Every structure is written in structure tokens, then in C-alpha cells.
Image 1 (tube, helix red, strand yellow):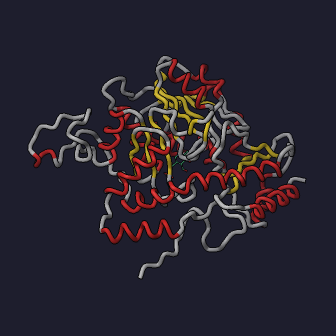
Image 2 (cartoon, helix red, strand yellow):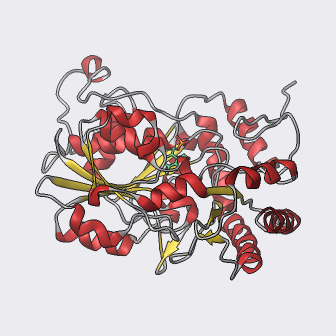
Image 3 (tube, protein in one colour):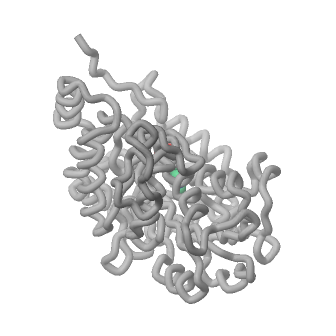
Length: 406
Ligand SMILES: Cc1ncc(COP(=O)(O)O)c(C=O)c1O
């Protein structure tokens, strides 16, 4: 008899918090999908993953989806694929423009592939890269921009896309935090040559661990499929643009053409993803209802800098920065949140320059500093949003912060 009690290490399951960072969105549908997959006896990547890839790409109006075992793996093979394009491949030593605030694995593949980072400050209100600084970040060696929409809020993707186009740069959208967000009616995660998503537990849809890369480029699609699985040709049709079939079946079965990885998802994750995707629109609507309440309760209170929506946020969570113009003490605010049993975390890992790992990177800080990212790091935090109604939690948050910042 299987025990379907689910444990997550993102949140503290040793107790139920009053206001947790995230909650499971799995119901009977997901559990039944797992059961069906087990009954079918297919555990390694198969039909469910392939169908989910098509359904997910269709939802976003993109041609190809390549599912992987995490958003981080999506970033890894996404960057790798750009190094193996026939024309205009990325090369070691090329420069890439990145925001100062994002998750560690937005950056790590760039370091691993020998790219030099040009780090640009973020806007204090949107928390996304300051697009006014793109021109100053550009050098003759710049080949790519990595755009990240932080915690559901679209980056200035329209401006960034136009800029990339004008300067012949690749646009890489790490959309791992902003599934189903929109800018001028277009979904985030569709602006880039490569676009990545995460299905980790706390994200908009969850396959527990998982991710996907979307692209409209057929060559990239094939490169990604080979890089996902050992660098072999086995998952590619014989008409693939990236290799010529030649040998006997015996040799074709183990034909390696790229220095790839094994970052395949499990079949179960594909089956769960299909169920979760059906719920995505209603879950986003639920998140946005909570956002409306949060915005209403905190509006006009300049002790806090809230995330300003650019377009339509899919509201991963609610961010707050203790306004440096007021002298609220961070530690006492954090203590009050702990006391009230409200979970909170640093905004997307804070300012990347403040992490020890930066010593391994080749980088330049555009304009010599990232003052906004430092404020985000030192005085910012997020609390959870969920797909269901969390009115009592948001109201309690309001009271607690009001008291703690008096
Ligand atoms: C911006 C960003 N990129 C990449 C990732 C990595 O996704 P995963 O946890 O699925 O590896 C995350 C994780 O939250 C993220 O926030």
C-alpha cells in the first residue's frame, strides 16, 4: 500500500505554519495520474512527457518544448545549446548582460561555459533589470541578454527584446519564477530564443522537481533534445538538422554528437504536469485575487516598497522592502514575522554579487555598483502567495508589519 502523504523540503513540514511560503496544489487528479503511470509500467521518459511538452508549448503559443528534471537543468542545456548552433554560436569569452538579482542557477551555466557577466542593477520597484542601463552595458563582445521576471512580475521584455534584436544578441528568458505572467497580452517565457520554466514544488505548477525549455527554433529544439540525454542522437528523428544518419542501427543506437548531460525528467512528472497545466489558468486567477487584496491593504504605506506590476503579474509571492527612508529595524521585523508564524525569505536569493560564489566568476559591474540590488538584499523579503484564498493570512501580515514598523 503506497502512502500518499507528501513531504516537501521547501517548507517546514514539522509543523503547519499559519502563513506558509507555499502549499501543495495536487489533488486526486495528480495522484491518479501517478497511479496510471505506475500501472502502465512506464517510468523513464515516454509518452506522457512527450504529450506534456506539446501541450505546454501550445499553451504558450511556442513551437517546441523540451522537458527536463529542473528549471536549473533548463538553464544549463539552454545555454549549452547556444554554443552548438551552426551559425553564430556563443563562444567562451563572449559577454552576457544579466540582472544583479536572480537565482544562482540563472548564472551558473554562464560561468560554466566561460561567459563574462555584465551585471546590471535592478529597479527597486519592479525588482527587474533596469532596461535604461542596457545601452551602457553593451560592448562589442556582448552576445546575449538574460532576462528574468522576478517572482511573477514581467521584466521589460518588450524593450529588452527590441534591444536584443537591434544589436543581434541572443535573448535568454529565465522565466522560472513567472509562468503565466503577461506583458501587453503576451506571455512571459515566449520572448526569448530560449525560454526556461521551473516546476519545482513552490512554483505556479509543480511536478515536484521539473522544468521545460521553450523555443521556436528547430535547430535549438534538436540540440536541446540531444543535450538532455547524453548528447546522443537517439531522441532525434532521422531528418534532424543537427546530424546525418549514417551507420548501422547498431552504431546509431549509441551515437554521441554533443558533450551532453542526462537531465531527463521522469515519466511520472510528465503525467503530473499535464494535470497541473489544466489548472494553471484558475490557479493564476486565484493568485491574482490574493494580489489584489495585498495591494489594497498595503497601498499608500511608504514604509514598504512593494513590487510594482509591469503588465500582468502571475504573482509568485508578495515582496516587501523596508523603505530605507524609514528606520524600521530589519531584525525586529523578522522577529515579529517569526512570532506570528509567517514564513518569509530573501527575494530570489538577493544580490548575486553578495554571494561567496562570485569569486569564481568573470564579471564586470555596469556603472560600478548595484545600489538597488543591495537594498533588495539587505532590506527586502517575500512572503508566500498561493492559488487558494489566503485572506486571513494577508490580513494578519498587514497587522503584524504595521505594528513591527511603528
Ligand atoms: C529565476 C530562477 N531560475 C531558475 C531556478 C531554478 O529552478 P529549479 O529549482 O527548478 O531548478 C529558479 C528556482 O526557483 C529561479 O527562481
